[in-house]
Length: 333
Image 1 (cartoon, rainbow, N blue to C red):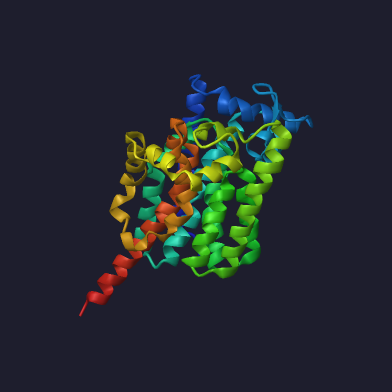
Image 2 (cartoon, one colour):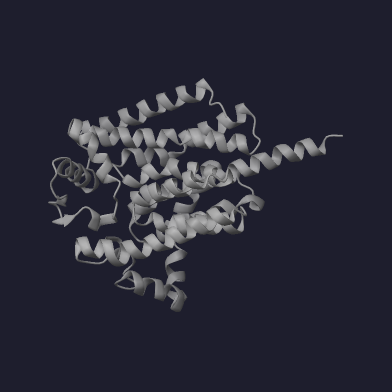
């Protein structure tokens, strides 16, 4: 399907705006050692052929989130070591998601003008701008890839689908939960058996490998984010066990004003496009949604990990608007 020139123009303008805003924040000395300085130092060390041991923690970068994507990203630092590469990569990643989003809208039967409207709503979604400003996060690279993965699954292009899944998993260990949940969605709701099983298997496999082998090997400790769920246990295994054995602990953490605010801010910008009959894409967002609701760490609710709910939220919007269009056509005499 041919991509309209206007869409490429929007992509270019959006990338420039996001890059400028992130660069301006950095110029105003508003950037943080955690996470921008952390990743900047790691990329520089990798580009120099040295072990990426972050001086803030004395840990290897893979002991943080098992984000292997930093190794290819370090190629930019070989050309010229400058933190603005990270701002550019993040801006392009966030903006480029409009291409597969537009294709998904067209695949759903929406006309060009409404597909472009969906694109505009995505770019104006507050979370996109907030994530772009909040230093740098490797998982943002996975956002457009999730869109492409679903397109590949629906087109039964399994090689492209597997490549997309591997790329997503390389961005951050926690994305293994999103990939596994996406597998459940594809398998039971999209009826894409092969893609669903592949996604489910790779997600579960990578979650076990990263949390039990890679991260402990490079950090000498449990996954760093475990501390955000200390009320459930001191290890990933203990936390998972208590999720099922002590549900009463969870309930006291779920129904809070902070979580109500989080849910409202997440869905209010697109509430006009939601329909209870077309919420199945949100199945894939359950792990990230649950992690953000259970934690007391407020930045997690506001920024990077919430970005993955964005894709599945817009999938619901696309499905609903397609239904509305079909309903209007069928109701005509």
